[in-house]
Length: 102
Image 1 (cartoon, helix red, strand yellow):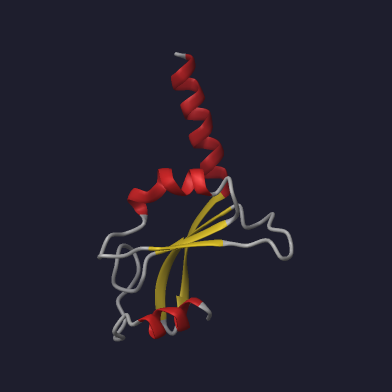
Image 2 (cartoon, helix red, strand yellow):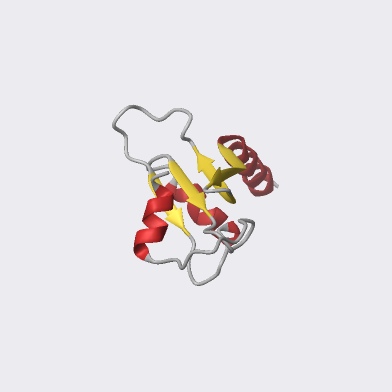
């Protein structure tokens, strides 16, 4: 019983720090999840998770929880994957990195 209560408490705590939302980049709605970015100190690195192989970020929740203990993080679904709208660009390294910096 203690294990179940502890697990529920951890999940509630994690969800209170996670912020799932959509942003618009180049007229395309992109799903992002930010964790612990609201308390980020100046100069502190941010870990960025980008999905690949057509898999949305949703299944990575447990990994994101652990990694967010190290530093604030941002996870997002690239255009056309998961909850993000498709765009008309080929996902080359250049195109993906350009969108990331916008």
